[in-house]
Amino acid sequence: MSRRTLRWAIPVAVLPVLLLLGYGFRTDPREIPSPLIGKPAAAFTLKTFDGEPLTLEAFHGQVIVINFWASWCYPACYEEAPALARAWRTYKDRGVVILGIDIQDKEEAARKFLAQFELTFPNAPDPVGRVSVDYGVYGVPETFFIDRTGRVRWKHVGAVTDQIVREHIETLLGERGDAHDSCPAHARRPRIRRDRRVGRGAG
Image (cartoon, rainbow, N blue to C red; front, side, top):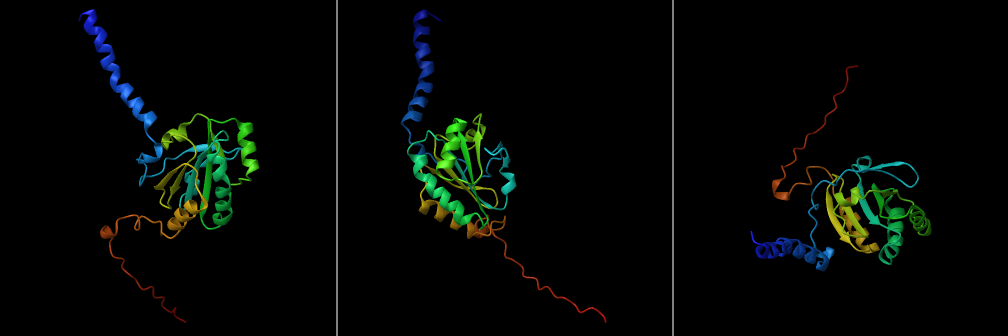
């Protein structure tokens, strides 16, 4: 291959990469559908700021809200924090758990953020970014709503509001949350009602 041909071959080879990068920088993450919707939420094990273990598995059977945030995320994370605090106070005794995952942050700044907004639901740093990668997080804030079967039902990019959180949580609370109800309506098998009769013991 001549030097002249090689000189042109290199730019052609990097062209697809440049196009991909250009697409990524120009694309609004809110317009990109998440491939996680309808699929089991990725398991993780972290340690909270209080030093307690935090796993997704521990909350199986509950409605789960996972919020990815950072103290440097201004103003969006600061705008949504009061809504998350209110949602936690409202739903924590109704089978709902909110989990905060802090990414690419400094511990002192993160703790100050939690104290400022009195966020008492479990929060943990994601030190190496593994959890945020597993959830395909483009930036913060991003919030995932997970049903009782452990499947991701919604992903919200940007600051959540009271209305957004309430609507998603109420919808999930209104579902049975078992494998039967996760199937499409036309695929469900009819339930067979069985009368439970209790016989009287002799004597």
